[in-house]
Amino acid sequence: MNKTTTFFSKDTDKNQRLDKFLAGKLNNHTRSQIKRIILSNGVKIDKRIVNSASEKVRVGSQVEISFVEEKEIKIRPKKIDLDIVYEDKDIIIINKPSGLTVHPGAGNIDNTLVNALLYKYKNNLSDINNKTRPGIVHRIDKDTSGIIVVAKNNITHSKLGEQFSKHNLVRKYRCLVWGVVRPLSGTIKTFITRDKKNRQLMRVSEISGRKAITNYKTIKVFDLKEIPKISLIECELETGRTHQIRVHLKYKGSPILGDKKYGKKNLKFKKINTDFNNILKNLDGQALHAQTLEFTHPTKNMWVSFESKVSGEFKKMLNLLNNLSG
Image (tube, rainbow, N blue to C red; front, side, top):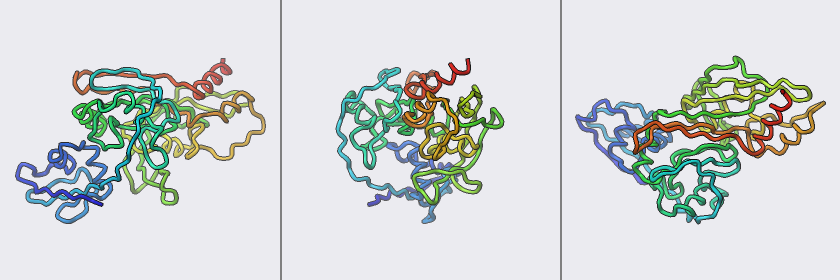
C-alpha cells in the first residue's frame, strides 16, 4: 500500500532541484532516500512522473511523492562478533567480514550486521532509514569485506547521507582480477542498469541507467608459472552504484577472482599450482575489499580517514602470489 504526500511549490522554490525541494519538506528523509524514490518513479510533478532528481521545480507546481509502506519485520538482536575499528558518540566504523549481509532481507532476517548492532547498541542507532536498517547509512555486498560506517543518531545519519549522495567522500577498494586491465590505470565511465534477463544482476549500458564512474590503477601484475596472469587493482569510486566495481571490471574483461555473479564460469586449467587452486576454491566471496573510507566527521567537522587490511582467503591468496613472485 502506498502513502502519498503532496506539496505546492512557492516563489522561494523557483528552479530548485527536485530532490533538494523534497528534502526541505521531509525532515525525516535524506536526499539519497528521496533520490531513490524519484528514480523508482515515485514522484510526480503536476501529475507527470519524473525520474530525474535534478529536475527543476517551477513556481506553483504540485509535487506528489509516494511512499511504499513496507511490511514490518521483527528483527531480533543477535550476538555476532564485530571488528570495530573506531567508535565515538556519533559513529561506528566496522570492518565487515565477507559473508555477512549488512541488513535483513528476503531469506535472511537473523544473521546480519543489523542484528549484531541491535544486540550491542539496542536503540542507540539512527532510525530515519527504516525499521529494518537502524544505523545503516550505506552498504557493501555480502561477499565483499571491508570498512562501513554506522550512524548512532539521526543528525549524524542525515549529514553522512548527504556526503554519500553528493560523493563528497573517498572510498577505495582493493581487488584481485583475472588478467591485466588496459590501460594499467584510468577511469571507467558508463551507465549501469539492471539486467533484463536476470533482475538480480546489473550490466553496463550505453544508453540508459545511472551514470557510474570508477577510477582504477594497477598496483601489481602477477605473471607467474602455473598460475594465470592476475592483477592487484585499486579502485576509487566517484559514484556508488549497485555492484559497480564488479560490473565495471567485468566490462573491462578482467572480472574479480571468486565473483560468483560476474566472474569467470567453469574454470579449467591444464597445469595449475596446487596451493593457488586450493585457495581459489575456498575463496569466501569475491576478492574485493573496501579498504579506505574518508569523510567529514558529522559533528567534529574535521576530515577523518579509516583503513583496514584484507583478511581471510583474500589475504591467503595475496600472500601466496607475493611469495611466489619473490
